[in-house]
Length: 184
Image (cartoon, rainbow, N blue to C red; front, top):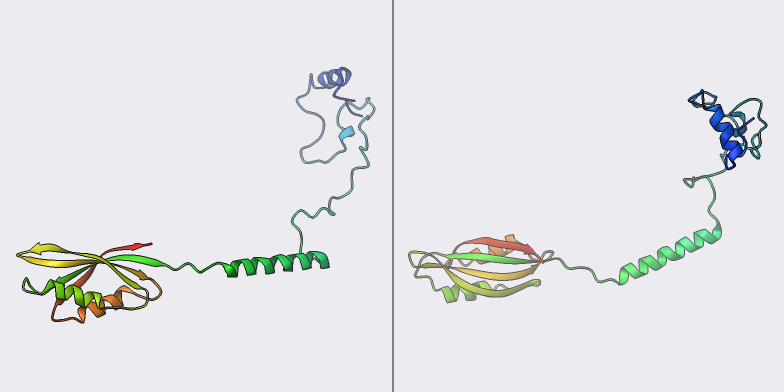
């Protein structure tokens, strides 16, 4: 039973004749039949192993189930590779997070000594803090504010600490604002 070899002209002719008055090849959807069981009844089955291929495919483990034991060689190889990865990872230097901060330091009035104000601000020294350039920016009515750049290590220096230390110079500093904060 079957259409024969569909690679030959005779097999294709037999399939074409069978499908001339049908829109399907015999069987219900979802019903599993051997390949040779489809087609006209009076034709001999020429497909190889039509009835022999009914075994279950349970022996194929597509997802690698956990119930099987790992071989000693595979376990040793995995442990060796993990150790190599850990040693390689530990040799890398830790990345230090830094930020660039632009501070606006405002004086009390136009008579405040701005050079002394800058000297006081730059006198704040701590690990992870580097002072950069500064300039005086006019605010109004002859009053100028000090804009000063600094680079800080995020783990060691915070903006709260900077604000507390700068505003501690009460004779010179009225207030302090963070004008810009950029991660480096």
